[in-house]
Image 1 (cartoon, helix red, strand yellow):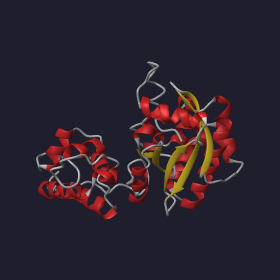
Image 2: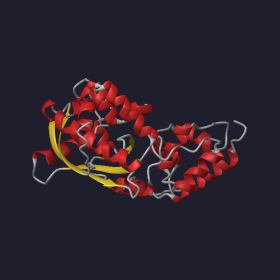
Image 3: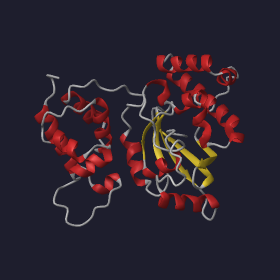
Length: 293
């Protein structure tokens, strides 16, 4: 990669790291901080990288980060769109598409996500591809799978992979199927002749009779607020309200889960914050099924 500008890439990352306060990204400030902004190991933690690898990048060594790594760093450092593009240019990588699982989570939604520290929350695309989630969301619905293509969409997996449906009680499956299809109808209309959506719809019509029948009803409704029963392997069925805040262009959504005070769901959420992502059942398959929403 002859076009990589390693010194400028390192300097840019260091300058952005110095600008971000720990409180901006949901980290404790702590005493005796010797550096402005975030420490290197904190950036690595937020981006899901090893501290040693991030240090190599910031020192301008021969580390040549992938597009996926750059996207994770852009999110961790809360870069705006121009800064994200600059980062990719310095690393001689192609700018990611405006949508899809590698899209740049919009800073406004990330800022709100950082402040939702006591409730499960995540940012997804309009095709239900998870971009980033907090630890409570990972504990509740599992970490999103590292896959590309149509399978990155939870809606696509819902109609093509039966294991995906385990997060909801079987009695609720028809309800969620209708909701997902009606929401996708709205996305398809808003995006117009978008080839990504057209390809997904064509594939789902071919692979799922249930999807095809629901699509032909032409029901349409953007999924904003919902009441859900979520099956957790340790805590059992948790009744929660799921709220959705759409970005201005409608391509991304911030989802967060709550329960009224004093309810069993509220008590279960408190237990979830203690249990975290531990698997106390010995069955890791449920938690690894990826994003559910």
